[in-house]
Amino acid sequence: MERPILLFTGVQRLARNLSSMGYESACLMEPGEKISRPEEIDHLVEYDPKDPWSLETWALNWDKRNRVAGVINRRERRVLEHAILNQALGRPGVTLWQAKTLRDKLSLRLFLQRKAPWLNPEFEEVDLREGKGPARFPFVLKPRNFFKSQLMFSCRDDKEFQIARRRILLSIEEAEGRHGVQLERTFLAEEKLSGRHFSIDAMVGGSGKVIFTPPVQLTIAEQWGYDDMHVAVRWAQAKVDGEEERLLQRAVLGLVRALDLQLTPLHVDLVISRDEVKVLDAAPRVGGYRSEMMELAWGCSLDLMNLELATGKDPTWEPRWRKEVAVVELFPPERGVLLELDGLDRISRLPSFQRMVLRSRKGDEVGLAKDGFRCGLFVVLCSDDEDQVREDVEDLRKAVKWKVQPK
Image 1 (cartoon, helix red, strand yellow):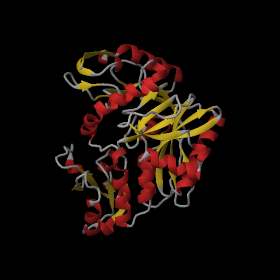
Image 2 (tube, rainbow, N blue to C red):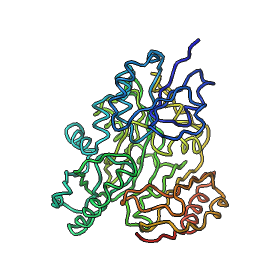
Image 3 (tube, rainbow, N blue to C red):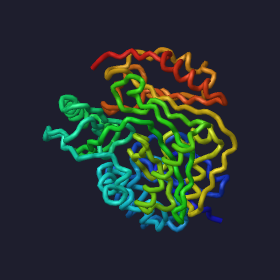
Image 4 (cartoon, rainbow, N blue to C red):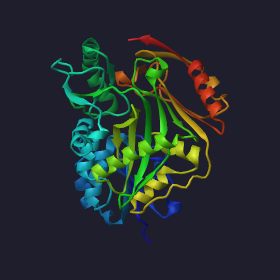
């Protein structure tokens, strides 16, 4: 008997473990992409990310299309592909107009200004080629369709804006080539809000019912003394302030209602400033690191909840335990060629150490997020003891030393 198929927009962990659940897996892959253990995937589908609409023709003509039980996306760059496949295969979830609104930060701002203006900070569109800055300061200058905190600059005055503008224009083509993204040439200038930063991952059911997962508090790199906007630490904490959580959930619910989302995960970045909550970014997918963090901290798999949504079911949040988790992203202090990364041997000896991934090697070009680079190293920490995790984060900061030849 033929099994139903789950179609993924890229190879991920869940796609390798489906046979025991009664499914086959199909995964998109780019031309020449190296896939580890490809035998664990039932169907690999090559497509050109420069032509996402080719997926519509493929899906409409695929001889196995009637067996597709759901489409799942975990990739930041493949929100549009997800919506195209949903439409072509007649699957529920994120629609084309929702995907187009959410993947462009300016489109999201303009949409919320009409539907839920209380969720928006002040903002305006800025053309970097013209050299004219926004009308108000301070602000955060950010790309409309990039991910993480890359090519983002904090600007207190026009002098800082002009420095940021020139730096972005010098870096933008390299960043596009490094990540395979075509960026809009106008940027978003967004009011810079001081306050507490959070993210929430929610699961939106078929009737619009929202299942909230606990908020994750974010430490922005500026709080560590970096001149950069990347998220230095994501904290999944057992103790969450009840009033803050209600404020955050209310904002996420407002976003869900404004966009009329159904049967989709939703990752939202927010800030609580002056007792108000503003939405900083949102995407119809599970957030980066979030499934691992929630499994470690609460014993719940967001990937399995996402699978239930993709197949038309309403998932449930059923925590099995509570632990403290931190994911730390580490960047070099400046751009250049990596000569040495000292202190790695000390990381695995931290009491709460879970795992680490080294992305940058000796001889690689490295840099901050504002120069268009991803983190060179990330570390996952987990413990029953909150104080231990916080102590290990501080020890980690001190242990890792970057030696970089400036470019």
